[in-house]
Image (cartoon, rainbow, N blue to C red):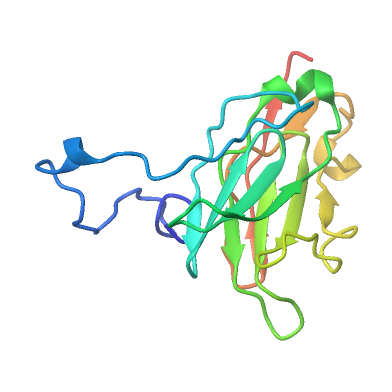
Length: 178
């Protein structure tokens, strides 16, 4: 799936025909990837991976992304974003990634939001933050304009962003009892 939910409408329907009711019981794991990293907080992954140009991109808690070879599971790169509020990491989970093909100045990017209210743009080929996006690859969305006079309320991003041309669209979540 090149976008969250397979297509821009997020329909989660695949037209592929290789797996059928007749052969699904014969499937077996080809490889696995360990998402839990030593010393990191643990959350179950709720993210839908995307596959673009022969690379599988997986987002998982907490604020991490990996690029994998889909045939073998070989790790091409791993990225770990910062954790702003360790006490609140249980309040949300990254659920998806977006791919942006790039332009004349910027190579292809993987874009994702965090439960801490940040949005990252990382190079799809290297996993390095995009220095031209926000502050060295990170945009803090917890600005006074967004927080609207409530700077201590929890605000985060847990859905995959949607990219149209050079614009990133995203929703947010908050928890109003904090």
